[in-house]
Image (cartoon, rainbow, N blue to C red; front, side, top):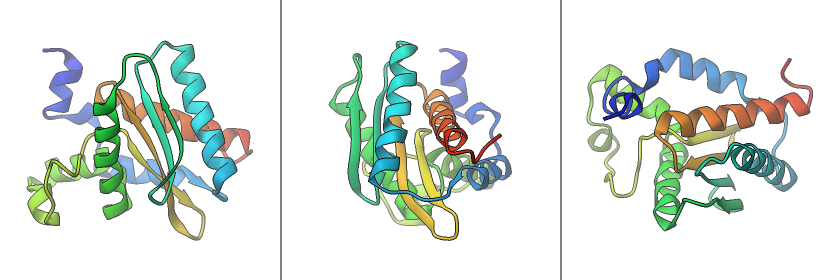
Length: 170
């Protein structure tokens, strides 16, 4: 078992719910629509392909899939994972890894607490809320195909790059 596998089964990369909350507060967009969704998707695609990553990528406005790319090494199972992660973000307004960390910190059965089944919801990294200043949740960035910590970190990098291009992040 690799170090990443160990993190999936317990420590989740050393993330804390407080740190993930701060991260989500920093990654707020000034606006979000189709053009932004496509640009975010393209940034993710470019980063993943330039690094030879095995990743499937989606950007959604609500439940509408505006951008989708399945890179070599991914398959329909990644689509299933992205759908499950998207449901977590839509339900809670937080990232899918944030929900996993919260469940571990509070020692709760996340699925029982929310009255949902694991086959439909995944509290694994790679589902990130796209929040708009003054409006809240407007979309979702989804990454699947790598260990959950890497999925999440790529999503954070993508949103950070998008904000930097818009002059929103130093």
